[in-house]
Image 1 (cartoon, one colour):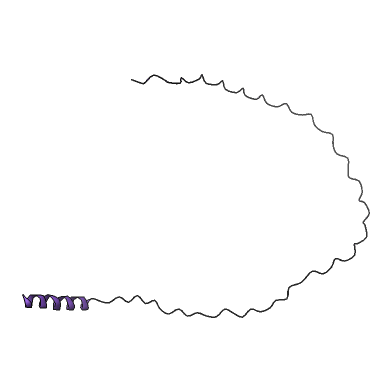
Image 2 (image 1 turned 60 degrees about the vertical axis):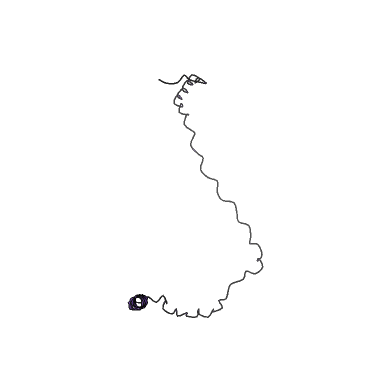
Length: 94
């Protein structure tokens, strides 16, 4: 009995150590520093300048053509008649 337990423990140790060990170490991540921020001049609006001179009114436009007579509207379809009211408690179907 002693030898059976010893033999089982030895077989287990060899069996477990023979397996390929998977290493879950990701490759190292190389962090590159962000490029240095370069100050960019931003135009800032200043105060409004003086108002310009008023322009002259433009020439009058051409007279429009008279309107055409209205076309008659097509006859609208009559609404469908409402369905008869349904029974409150219809008899069971056989």
